[in-house]
Image 1 (tube, rainbow, N blue to C red):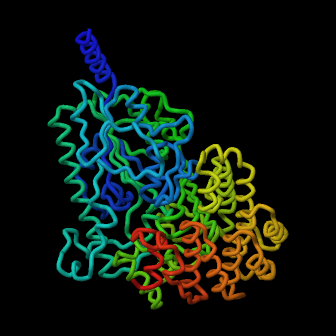
Image 2 (cartoon, rainbow, N blue to C red; image 1 turned 135 degrees about the vertical axis):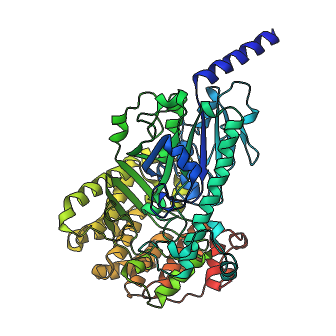
Image 3 (cartoon, helix red, strand yellow; image 1 turned 135 degrees about the horizontal axis):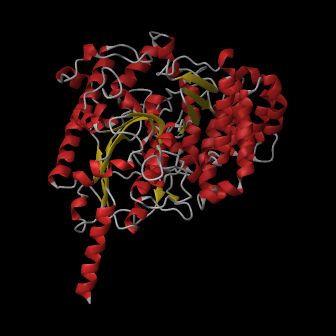
Length: 612
């Protein structure tokens, strides 16, 4: 009986293997498409990837929905928008539960008979088990049963940001393979020897990564599985030169993607091999696409849609022209940015525009290029495009990516583009409302109120979140039209409406000076610690009141490390930006466990304030 069952299982495995392709993801870390010769003149030569592209598909408009590791990977593994499922903060303060009725997508492949392996990065912001047969530095598809199809992820880390944390001495002693003098520096970067060397070194890392990928692809050939294997190559989010990784510009979101299918499985590609595809695809779509290629039903609870496989036509792919992006906390640095691409136009909504891009972040500023860029700005040696990174932003921005690929020329105030601006503004607002974007609650509130079941919380609080979004969007109106609604928001019963009312005042700056007395009252009397902080922040930004006493009191009252870190973001903003306040932040202000973890966010801020 056992022998019979064993024979049946082998027969079934062989049948599955014959009917379904193997699927492999080869992933390079931290590199947008802007760094590859495959996409940009002067980019890094990656001959192995280019060879795949000759007989595969090159996607011009592939997007990581988030410009940073854990949020991007959480989006990939769930097929879901991270702000909908509480996976949008890097690094997580707590693991979010998987949405009810949804598993990480390799789980469905395993159920269908696939052997699933991951070598080796996970870095998810959610908790789930049972999706991998193997997940480690030694994970390999070779351990599957005979004839069993496999899904394998192979990660390559040579292009990771940390590889560019070198010293001046290293730079002087180690020449690059790529000629720095041949580099074309992006218009928002200063053209200096440090930047040229860093560009060249990053391109060298691409070349090294391509060689490693070539070895892996040769292994598929040697193992006799290449002719049954569909291969994806992509970058896990944007590149790591300053203003890339961590920022919701194209350099942080627009990733390389090549998909190769051998002759046997080429019918699963909706357009001819060797084509360059203009249709838009995003990380939410990658999991559903793998499931579709494997003949597995895509869960309706996923946000993404397949772009390859049965049922997908060339016309379907051609008509895809939208992408949604998000950037929230990145380590200790907070922001709240949402983006919407439609065709050639990119809309960016900066919900806290005073929170400038270059706000200090410990891991970013380990790079010499970041340090030099800041020093040149402080010395007044940058032009307008190069200075933007260190200055307050506009609440919304609009770019024509075809004519302005580096997002330098903001068209939001150009009357010629008013209809485009309004259309994309409406689309983005509808989108954040439709997903019940949980970032409109400050992170400490989200952790306290929503983490039991984030998706259910979002649905049950859909109207409440929509009110928070509408309050935030008061900053898009002329102040005279917004004034009455701001006053109502600052007196609302919901503390997070008041919270956003104060942020809107900061967005208007001195135009909102009529709310100084209201803000002072909130600083003195509001029940919410964070409302008091945002009100003090507004007063400080317009020079109406010294924020120190209010901030010290708020730090004293902070109930969690996450709350303290959010307050310290305000301290950093007010100290490093205009008008520039001095704070006396000391370790003794915080509980021992908040300041003992060397990688903890409060500890990172303390190290910066204290010069450690």
